[in-house]
Length: 330
Ligand code: UDP
Ligand code: MG
Image (cartoon, rainbow, N blue to C red):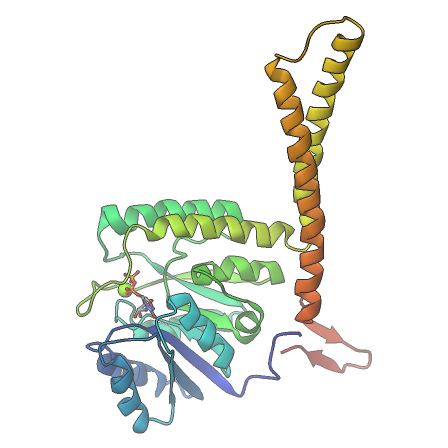
């Protein structure tokens, strides 16, 4: 598989993007260990310090000095939570990758529940903050609408895309490329490669210390990202089929209008120069040609995208050769 590095070396990676959470890291670290140490599995904790300016980086560093399980990645500046997840995914060595927030709004004690669900054969298990402890108007309501919309548009039905507490199979995190604010869409993006997705209720607590990094403005960005995701899911390997269809439609409409105007001009000697319909006809023809050209350019871009990265347009689950030699991917 193109983007997967060899095979997982550990059972579990816990990936945590952290930005200015100096009051939370020590307790987070202790509570993670309280859970992970008792699982009887090999694990690593990947803390990604996303350019914190409050001493979070140093706090993590001193924790790492006494903990061989803890790997601290420090960004040069604040790149955002999605970049934090992306770095964690790139470095992760676990067969299962758990993501969690650093602010203790999620409960590390829920990790075993996610793992149990994964053991049933799922590729993604998403936490669902059934009793979410955030303000209603500014956070819960927009999020409710966004979850409905995302589910409907992507066809992957989840109650809580925004919950950071999730578990992914190694193959998922190694195959999904994250840009912008796409981290919440990983289950939907991964649906492209054919994944089994489950959802389980998890605990959620009000933020005790530190400040939330987001406000209502995030909603707009989520909607824009949703457009990207929808396009990626449906047309990223065949842009001409989207742009071409729109282009043909526009061009066809414009052509019919132009033909009609030509007939009444030539056969019926009517003046057409002052008719709004003429403008519409010309506009549709031009827009149509542009959309068709955009589709062609898109086709070129897709080829560059897949071929430069050696990224196939399919993902294999496994290859079974004759004589029972099963060759598992990943
Ligand atoms: N975070 C990050 N980079 C950012 C913003 C946030 O790594 O630029 C981390 C933050 O430290 C926390 C998680 O992302 O661990 C979620 O952030 P927050 O709790 O502020 O979001 P909310 O729970 O309010 O949606
Ligand atoms: Mg939070």
